[in-house]
Amino acid sequence: MLPLMATTRRRRQLTQSSRSGRRTAALLTGALLLAGCGEHRTSGDAGSDAGSLPDAAPDLGATDAGLDDLGVDASLGDAPVLRHRVDMPASALAREALRLMGAVEAGGSNSCHDCHGITRESIGHFRELSDTAWSTCFTDLAVTTPVAAERVISCFRAAGNYSAGKLGIYSTGAYFEWFRYVFQRARGAAWEADYNAFVARVGMSPRGHTRWTQAEFDLVTEWFLRGTPQVETILLPPPPPPDCTSSVGPEVAAIVDESALTGWSARNRAASILMHGCAGASTASECLGTYPLASDRAIGAGWSVIAGSRARILFEMNYASSYWTRSSADGRFVAHGGSPDGSGAAFIDLQRGVVIGAVASYDPGFFPDNSGFLFQGGGTSLCEQSVLSVGAPTRITFTEPGCTTASSIGLYQHMGASLDGGDYFAVNSAWSGDNGGGADPTLFLDAGASVTFIAMINSGAGFVEDGSTRVAIPWEGSAVLSPSARTLVTQIANSAAEPVGYVLRRIDVTRSGSGPRTIALPEIARYCVPGGKPAISLDDRWLVTHHRATDADAIDLGFTGPTDPGFAPYRNVSNVYLVELATGVTTRITRMAPGQQALFPHFRSDGWLYYIVKTGTLPEYVVATDAAIVLGR
Image (cartoon, rainbow, N blue to C red; front, side, top):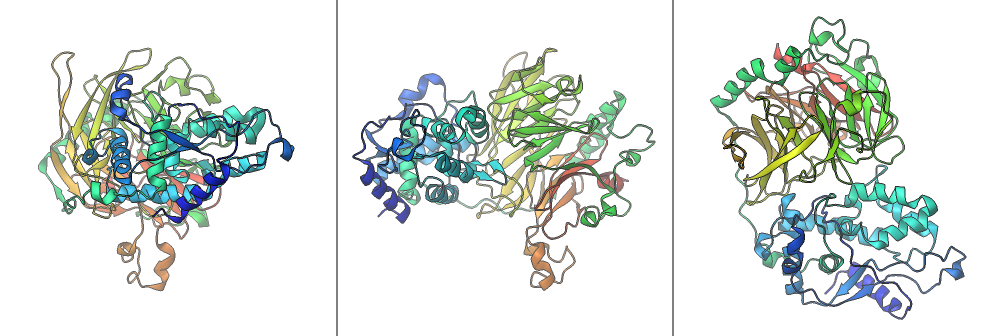
């Protein structure tokens, strides 16, 4: 039996089957995004890999009213078909849908599995998102008026930004005609720029990757609309991941000691790279002295709790940032998704005190030697840092000299550079999106998880890719590369997909001449600390992360326990935590007030770390703290 939502869909189809003159949707390519990941296939294997897809009928979901009858512009004609019904037995439909999604049990590979474990839990999560999307955003597929179309577009937003989570499985069709039509109907002549901004955020996989066809989209959405039948028959329950047991091997101290002398912090000092706000300062802690102390404002009372440390407010943003924030090694540039006009992403130039718009969406990254940066959205763009620092740019389009595309680098990448003057690296692995708020993001992992290293070379005229290497990391994801590319940090989760700790691995790269690289990742430490995706300091000494409070944090936050009435407003409040890699000692460095979120902490070269503070209303804040410098003494 179909769920109520799907039954309603069938009734809509019956009322529309008599409509004539409908345009059918072109068999365009779509984006494979279950909160963000694409199927990686060569262009020549789509036919043999697709299997035999059945004939389909249009799923119109509209009323019989004509456009002329409503007094609106009829030049657009009727809405294209969003999707087609698929007549296939449940067992065959489930197996084919799971194969397309990359489930090994169904004979699939890559696809969604490159970014998410395809498990019963992850399919249940995607189905929940998709059910909500279908019953709220796709109730009027005819979109016969601008008001109706605008209502659909508004439904695709969360916290002011387009969100793949608001579309669920239907994000995979963001490139299709129906979505283009909705924006045309709502926005008139201005539709294209708005539509491109929408596609850049939710239309995954990124540009340069093969996307699902209309027929594949039809098949997978049919399976979700039927309630994902047979999922538990095909996807057997996997054995639970191993429990987290903290351990730190002697190799960690050796790496930390060596990096203190030769890591990127030391090298940037030797190169006389001036840290932002440090002119005239005799010590690192004296930097940023012209910025106001958070403790001088009532709202910032808990933004620094380490004795002797200071938190300073670097910038107030009168717009909502989106997903993670990262900054350049010298601390001058801060970047994140979200922008004042809501059309893309932003760089904040702290030296000039201005916001620079960017034709991007999320996931910025900077190389640790101040040489370049990367941004995702509508493709992956990689630029020399001079694009930001030379002149006074007001908007970055990624068509500037010094910018190139890096199509092999997927979402939620992390970046580093070897210390021998050779390779620059980015890494990708399975991940879960984190846009602030709520609990720590669930992490769907399985025994087939892997990490991909993408090597790059700075040619002097821009960065060029130089091959990739995939390495198995069973039950691990959200991989983060240390700035020196000496270590890799991954997250592990329990059987409920809740993150429970971090694994530290040494990176051993071997290469003969210009041949392929071989990479080994021996485990050297494990830290049983919950949280979000971490960052590593440029001297390889610290791991920093943010973590939303649960009952287990009540005593640490000063309450008698989780039943203490005073603790209730602190649940899901996000704080920043430092982990000293050589010892495993973990220190909470903030005590945020109810309703506040300290998010996306990361280091600049001299040990100051930056993070974002969200309070539920604007402005948001870019904050810097010298807590690690103080603790390091």
